[in-house]
Length: 403
Image 1 (cartoon, helix red, strand yellow):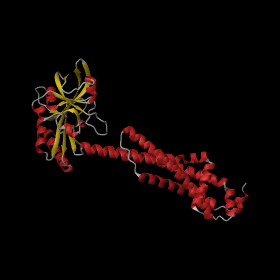
Image 2 (image 1 turned 180 degrees about the vertical axis):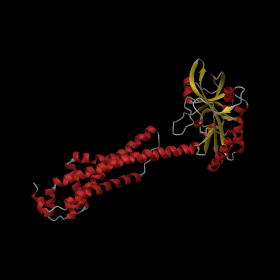
Image 3 (image 1 turned 120 degrees about the vertical axis):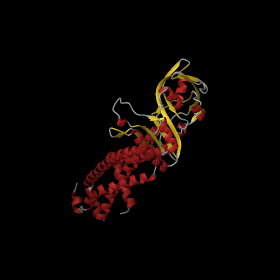
Image 4 (image 1 turned 120 degrees about the horizontal axis):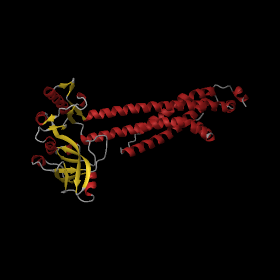
């Protein structure tokens, strides 16, 4: 039997049973659609993560108090200026560094008031997190050395306080002092990785904020960020910092008083979570494909029963068992391929919608489509072979007796 003739006859059968064929293919549709969607979304996710890592740099580490070492309400040991000096002097490959302090305050300008998050940071902070300044400038070393009361603001707070007026050079009041706005950042697009600020954040020099917080007491910092020129220097720095902090501050209840975090560690955690989610969806999709395959087998068995007389007539006019087997196998595979094709369109549409909502780059890999169609073909072969075999083993005389 010719394949082309078998395909033509298959479409005639499908056309004569549209609703039944559609319902039969639903399981394949959803299974293949799920596979395609999770593959594309997963690829887009990983590409987005790689892009953000390239922007922030995977060679970023930060030191902060280890909350696991303390009970609720207990005083925590913070980093001292002498600790920061040690890091700056004895860690090879250190490119950027920044201390961080944070506080929620009331900011005012000409009678307008807003509650905002104020970050005390060093000049390198803007380079570490690739924060772009749309107007004015970021902090410079002279701002720190001369203890200038300056600030850089995000777009939302600029709109709330200044409206359409250019904020550069204006003075705002907070923390008991007036600060001159020297810079306005570009709008922050929220992604997986962030410095913790938002579009209503105000930045001031950390050295000045530290004096406001600690007064005449010893200045301390909550977080110290460091970015290195290579991963080898990152690993070396982590060992040195860890040994230094343990020797100086020891342990509390068996826990280190400080923890050292790496950017790529967080990326790996997120990636593992995505892998678990992907596996769950793949399991669900596989169940859907099996159910779809069983639906194909069931319908094909019903079709064999309905077309018993047709099978007998074909055998009587010269068709052999192989021809009957091939015909019903073609029908099963065609149903699965049609279901797989619709599933591909469905999955691509869902993935495109998800990427659009999450603002990820939509990435399509033709290998995913080929794999999905290959799975559909395999389902057709596995679940179509028994009905096709049953049809091919009918005796012409017995088949012709069926009314």
